[in-house]
Image (cartoon, rainbow, N blue to C red; front, side, top):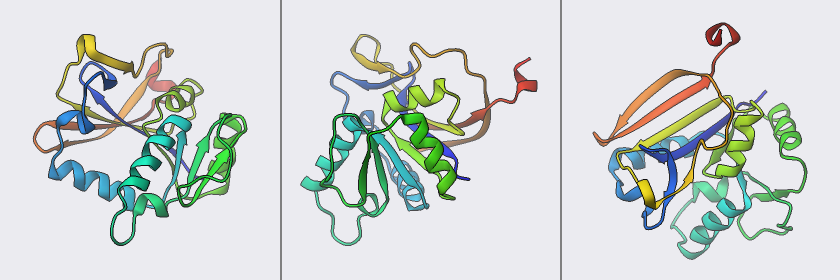
Length: 187
């Protein structure tokens, strides 16, 4: 049975984006690029919402790469009630069904993990439903304050987590990997 890994890039004050924040919040680096490439190279099924799909597919369509494009090669499931097939990006399909039903089905059918990249609304729904097996946060050394958009954890119930891994990238970013805490750890 596959696991669901939710990957989010966030600021120190917990935002997924900002008014004028560039890609990687303006903190690109060789170790971050290596981390992204290593995690994309692994077998996986990408799970995303419509907004993330449209943004990433537009980038893929407007900036074709020479040679194999790993994002295009990977199977992608887009959870949306408004998108319809066919989708322009290779190996993509729309799931116009209940998110939780689709995730349960995908987990049962695949040994490869499901992985979200962004898709904050999808991640929040799955966290609240306790369907995320691993939560990986890459924390950028930036406080957006009044220009922050998309607070990652706003509106969620209390969720107890257990830290299972950390990594420092480019001497300034911290990747934190969590799994849901067991009942004994939350008592």
